[in-house]
Every structure is written in C-alpha cells, then in structure tokens.
Length: 439
Image (cartoon, helix red, strand yellow):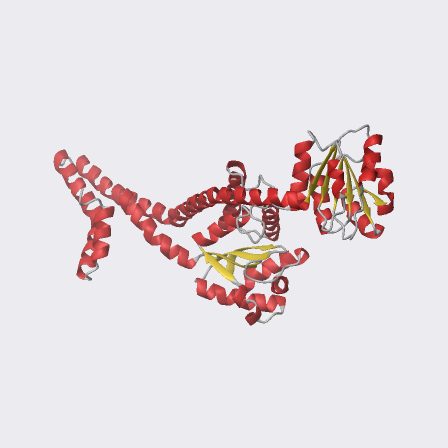
C-alpha cells in the first residue's frame, strides 16, 4: 500500500502541476533601466483593482503584485500551461499599462513551480536586491501580501507560500550575517555612531546638508531612536521638508557655529566646494562642551570638514574613504553569508514543494483508501454470512484471503502487463521498485 500510494503521488503531482503551476514573472534592476521599469510599475492606490483584473484577464486562481522602485513582480497560481499563461500576462500588461509588448518582453523573466518558489524566497531574503541583503524588500513583500489578502486574490497555495517565505527570511536573518554589516555610507556612518555611543537615545545629532545621502542618514538615525536631530542646509525649504518626516529642527549653514557645540554627532554631505566646518569652529565647540567627545563623519567630496579637525583630541573624524574601506569588507562578509542563505532557501523550497505534493494528492489517496476499505468490507460481509451458515471457518478465511489478494493485485498486475506489452521497460523497472519486487 505505501509503495502504491507513493506511485500515485508521483504520477498525480506532474498532472496537477501542469494544470495549476505557480508562476513568478517580473522585471528588475538587473534586466531593465528605470525608464523601462517605470512603465509597468503599479500604483498602490490602484493595486486592488489591478489584482482583480489579473484574476479575470489572466484566468489565474490566485495573484499578488510586488511593485517597488527596483522591481515589479507578479506571483500567480495558474489554471493553464506556462505557455498560455505567458501569452495572457503579456497581453494584460500591455493593456493595463498602455505600453507595447515589444518594449517590455526582452526585460521580463519567468519562473515556474520550484523555481518560482525559490525566486520569491530569494527576493524576500535580499539575495536578489541591488544591495545584497538589504532588509527593506521584506517589508515591501509583506505589504504586497497584505494588499493581495485585502483584495481577496489569495487562497490556500499562495497564502501558504507567502507565510513560508516570511519564515525563511526570518531564518536567514537569524542564522546568517547577511544583514549584519553596513554596505552603504549612510548606514555605515550610523553603525559607527552606534559603536562609539553606548546608546543613541540620548545623543544629539547635527546633519549638514539635505540631499539624498543625508536623508538616508536621517532615516537610519530616526529608526534607531536617536535623541535629537538638527538639520542645517543652505535652502531652508528643502531641509524643512525632510525634517518634517523625522521631527527634526532646522537651521541655516550660517547658524552652525551657534549650534555645533550641542552636537554629539556631526554628519555632513553637501555640494560645497569649500569646507563648511573648520578646525577653529570645532575647537571653540569642544571648549563649550568641556571636551566631551564628538563623532564626526564627512561624506562630502570635496570635504565639508577641514582635514586638520582630525588632529584635535576628543574628535573622532571619519571621511568617505574610511567608510568605503569598511563597506568593502562588509560586502565581502555579506557575500559569504549569502552562500549560507542560498542553502537555506534551497532547502526550504524543497520543503514547500513537498507540502504541495501532499496537498495535490490528498483527495486521491483518500479516495483510494476508501475504495480499498469498501472492497474489504464487502468481502468481509460475505465471509461473515458464510460463517453464520456454519461453513468451515478455515475454508471461509482462506477464501477471504484469496479474494482480498486478488482484488488488491488486479490493478498493479494489469499495469505491469500493459507496460510489458507496450515495451515500456522503464515503467516495468519503476513498478518493480515501488512494489519492492526484487527484495
């Protein structure tokens, strides 16, 4: 019985997956420039209606959409073959976004079944990201799951796949160093500050500039619950826009000498051609601070902080070159961790596909068992009637055993004879194996 059940599972799995494959299709930073990616990005406000369109136009059972600045991916559980699915998805993308198929087809990548499962898990773990191991993608994938759940476009398979994917991402974060090391100058600067100060919750920070780098630094500081942030910039309106998101104060560059003494941490990144913070300014600030240490990071090229500031006691000054050395080492550490992460993803992909196999054959196995039990009960009822009629018990039991054996041997015997008549030697070898004939 177990061998026959295993055979049924293997045969039915292939048939089931041909009928209902898992598909992942997308476009990302590796396959297309932003000019192409933006053509098929999805507005979060319209995502629910887009999911409903997918269910109707692509004829899929389940659907989810992940859309970020670096990638747009569709995850589906389909009714049809992969070829039919591809044609319908391309047609729908063309219609929904109003772009010619020829402009997006070269950039699309396709995965099905285990490869699709593996891809989703890799994306959630940051293994397919522009910055290896970055954690933001997991939050974005969780948002995609929530949006699909709210739209009613998820059912058993995709819901289970997302939950398993989140579990794998957590396992990778816990068991490897994939996200432990800073790989951006902004993150590296904040990480250094965390090493120097026991806690950032009481630290006061002066950020000089309001460009993309400083904005990212501010975000990291805010997430680490830093005590207070002041933003100094030449244009107050730009600084105020950024400061409003993190509850920071705003000053002009001319006001820096009045406020720098309050700062435990100074991080600067402007486009100035001349230093903004000089040695004399910092010396006066240290006197006011009674020589309490100051951590300073100059991310600008040319420098915002005079090189001679590094000669002052109680000042820890790092330049962008210092951080690049740290980042290069950390990237190598992440690459090593990624090897471990890939192993976890591969293993967990197999676990999910094993679950799929169990799901796919459950009804058939139950039906097969019920059929066997019905045949057993029918023969047993006849045997009991014979015993009540005072027939020889030994003869009744022997007849029951023979009839049961014949019933259960009929289907496999027919399969073996059919394979032999058709010259299907590989099937005969397989049948001998599952019925343990050689042993």
